[in-house]
Image (cartoon, rainbow, N blue to C red; front, side):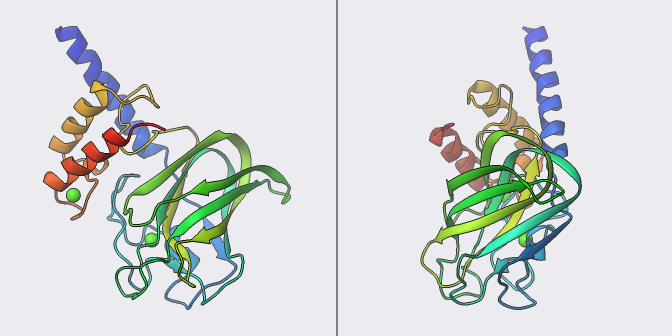
Length: 239
Ligand SMILES: [Ca+2]
Ligand SMILES: [Ca+2]
């Protein structure tokens, strides 16, 4: 029994360090449309709206100037391209959707469907992952796993549809070279299966005030809302 507990703690520590360590963000970005200098695509790769230490479970702050990307009114076929200074291996994408509930009267800026296209250094298409769904009113990152793509120097995100506003955009993006989790509740190996070890890991992370357990606002405060959010994600299951 003691051995089993020790083993789970060892597995836990390996998982947590790798989950946070493997996330990376693009080095630069351009967008087909930007509302103004306060709503640039750069706001999605600089950690704006996130605390100094964050995970894919960290809620992004609500929409204010200089923390989201927003297009101009009625922008046609909006897209954003993210660049990496060095070739990257990518297996998972993390999207913090638009939270147009701060300064905006219209709550429906958020992306509903999008496509990812991966390019090498010559601009040749390496892979495409089409028509991915995104929910609105989710402050945490939404997770998208796909077949591994190697040698990636840029990724284009094409917004196919949003939730109805003439403005579109999102809050933050990140990538990882492996599948880190099926959703925010998937915190212990094996990835893609939710069981007692995920729950035990969450409780341990929560007690240690780790960013992976800070699932709900207020960010930096660990309370019932984080536990409730975890239970919701756990019950949603791995799809
Ligand atoms: Ca941001
Ligand atoms: Ca919290």
